[in-house]
Length: 230
Image (cartoon, rainbow, N blue to C red; front, side, top):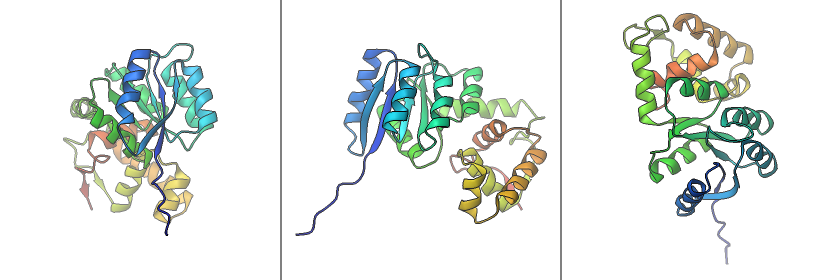
C-alpha cells in the first residue's frame, strides 16, 4: 500500500509581548491546516534567539517589543537566518513606521485590526518569497507618491520601463538579492546591478527601500502594474 506523505506545514514563530494577544494569534493559526506555530517569544531578544534555533519559515513580529524592539530584532533575524521571512504585525501604521519596516527588509506589514483570514494569507504569501502589506498601508504609500512628484511618483509621470526593468523591479521589491534576481532571470549579477542602477536613475530613487516603496505605490507587488511598458 502506497504511503501518502502529508504536505509540509509552514512553521511560524510568534513574537509578541502581550500574552493575551499571543495566545489569540496562536489559536487563530492553529485552525489553519498548513500552518504550525513552533514557538512564541515575549521579547525581541528572545525572538532572535528562537529564530536562530528553530529556523521558522515566517516570524510574525510586533514592533513594540521589550529588551530589543521589533525593528532591530527583524534586522538581526534576517541577517542570521536569511531563509526566514519576517511579517510585521503592529497597531502602528504611520509613515515613520512604514518607512522603517520597509528599510529593515521585512516581507510585509499588517495592522493589528487585520482579520485571521488576511493574516494566514499573508503568512502563505511571504513564505513563498512575496511581500504583503495591509491595504490601508498601500493606500498611504500611494497617497504619498501622488503628492511627491520628485520621487518617481507613479500617478502623474509616465515612467517607461523595459520589460526586463519591470521584472527586476518586482523581484527587488519582493526582497530578492542581486544573486537571487540573476538566478531567477538567467542573467549575470553585473547585469542585475546595471538594471538596478538604471531603475534608480529613471525613478530618481537612490536606495532599495525607495524602490520597494515605489513598487508598492505603483501596484507592482500586488500585480496591478500601472507602468507604461515599452
